[in-house]
Length: 364
Image (tube, rainbow, N blue to C red; front, side, top):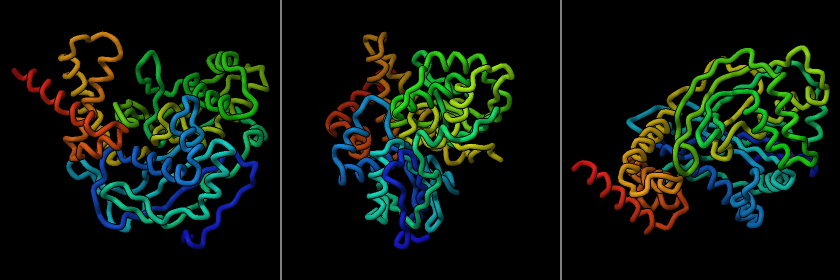
């Protein structure tokens, strides 16, 4: 349905809803590897124009964000180190709301939603918008009849933080911890985390999977090693807890809305119910893999030049400088990088020069 003829509406009580946008590039063009940060920024800027308070809340709050976005889905070709998009080819992008405040804003925003999304050198026409996850409240999720098994598919790289590193495996406690953390932050009725996760560890079985690990650029800086594919979880026969059984299945229904793992507001951890017939195409992730590998390589080199190699500060500084150099190598200007990293241009310029000198020093 054309956007001009489209009318989206749901009740004021709605807390959860997902929208899918059908996009077409105005011309064939190459898309930069970290375009997900551009989609993230575009969405928050749309919120800022209407509701600066909500935008600041979604951008700055340390607690769980009340939205997710996806990366682009559709046919693309890898040309060199960039993703080539074809004119008039259809691509899909989705947004979910995880609170009544965000759901209400999206409903009002759709009355004057822009017809274009501009990601630097690529401009997309918004051809249509549809609801891909039905409007619901948190209490309505609890009303869904429970089952003893749950199948989830992970469309974009999914990972968890564990002991300061990425953990790219769908272990039940990690998966359901990520859902419960968002639930307790955003729903009106929180659940005791420790008791439920102990039950998950003892009673939830990973009985079938088809997954593949992949490394991509994650958020504004650094890289993420995650997994994509499908997993089936099943309850053991002796669960003896109807309340937790219901919560197990309810959180599974919550998963497509909230995503799985970390960096879901940058397109990672996109989750769907059911089993994927095939894994997502590697081409759409290839450019991010190249960038992620280069950032990791440069970080290791720059760490050798740090006077104080211990602690997190040296690692973070090296990682930021490595990100700047890697993105510059892929054709981004320092001004574009500064905007994406939300850093002053002069700081980015200085970091680039310092990093380049450090790499030259290592050669001698």
